[in-house]
Image (cartoon, rainbow, N blue to C red):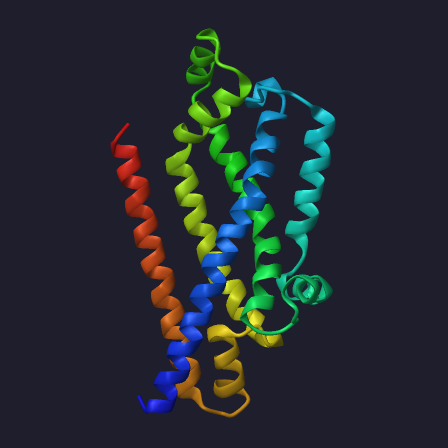
Length: 221
């Protein structure tokens, strides 16, 4: 590997890790409350503790609409928002905005599914001891769902790595941008191969770490 290739790959890898880590954080901040609301406002048969069919239906439709957008199209539509928030519509910083918004509805559904797996008996026991709805959510439901949440977050991170690579098609920075600009447009296959290998390694490492953390949480129960 020549020095130029090494420097460019290291820089692009750093950009990808920055995009993925920050967008994971922001998507969790956006998706966590939505996912909790989706579950707690569902019907009692589905485990909802504050059943509200209207709110649940509206939130569900919004999440479904956002999830249905192809990421490339969503990124283009959000160019004005990216420019307003970070001052630019290209590069690593600008890509974090659409990445976070694209992943948030996915995170919301993951959280909703994880909370549905919580044993209703545990919630009933907490209710019998006088716990409020807020206490049940914070101290019972979320801790009990943590193994499933960790697995879901792992899947989210892996999806964001794929999204960040696609963002390179319109100047998003990172490994996808390097693979397209140097590997494809300049006919340098070694650049593309390096980027693909690094992405595969990142996905594998994250999956292994996520599985181990989730496994340890299950073992402690």
